[in-house]
Length: 438
Image (cartoon, rainbow, N blue to C red; front, side, top):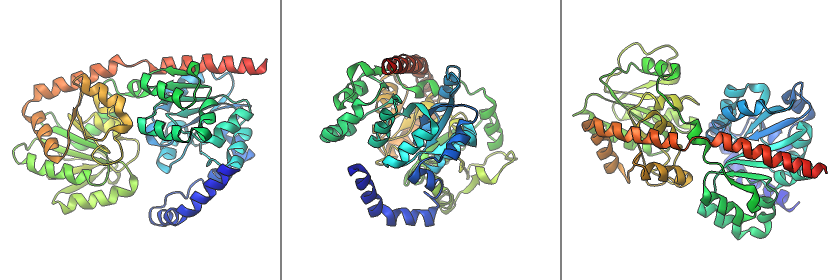
């Protein structure tokens, strides 16, 4: 009851901001009924289809959703007649999940109100709840326990700051961690932090990062080839992709691009903003800086001419960045020059790009550290260092290629997390179910 009251209070305080974003950007409008009330019996029956029970996978947004296709494929082989359904919390995550799994298997995750999460679990007849990375919702996890539904965290990560915050409120949150049936952690450090927060030590497993397994293995795919052709890129070009960008990062990239292309006419730039509501703003920025913008969403057919130096490709679509990294030779991962904490740098690394990112990668510390320690990426502090990095990649191509090969080797070395995750899920959940049945 206390948590429900707290959530209502917070939502009330945030309601002006939420209302503004609903009107201005169209956010939060979709799935309101599912979020506030949970899944109705009718909606849950549609998701279950011909199956009596479900395995529910939850992924917050795009990054987490991208981890699920391979997991769903493998889980389907051992689902034992249960439907596999996927929830997400954001519009972009929902749209990508629909693209992967079909609308009949996807829904919006309920907010952590007791009535909403309990209704959803009951109507889905959920036998296993799988949370990607860490979505610690106390009411949801407690409701699952009451219904004898094991809760598993996969690809678990827990920063030092987050762990300290959870421990500060340990009296309230430790029982929630203790209810987790199994936690597959990205590394030993994360596993220790989960235990410190209340997870039983026997339930914390080091399975590695699914992002390593999910990283590309080769540029020789139809998806990459289609985008190379669409962009009019040829062997003479050196393509620089700046992806998952936040406000300020596109302007920095454009400034570097303008200075370098005078001496390096072979350089081409691709910008991929993180959030859809910024697509138009970034397009206007490109034009304001004196360039022509080629918008991916406005050109359904192949781009007919070779890309000129004063044309910047703006990828203003969802779920394509993974393939656009394969078009690039040089990659800069956005979200790392501000306070966001970085984005997934393993996709460009898997393609063998010369990878760089900014000073703040707190959300990907383990991955960034492995790439840096193995000579597979470069951290740059600011615009000046970014320009120096891109210039080196243009003037010393063998060194840039070596950087990319090192990145690929590191990715290959750490694959295997899906196998370890599924083994953990099978052993822990089946043994738990057997124990409870007894």
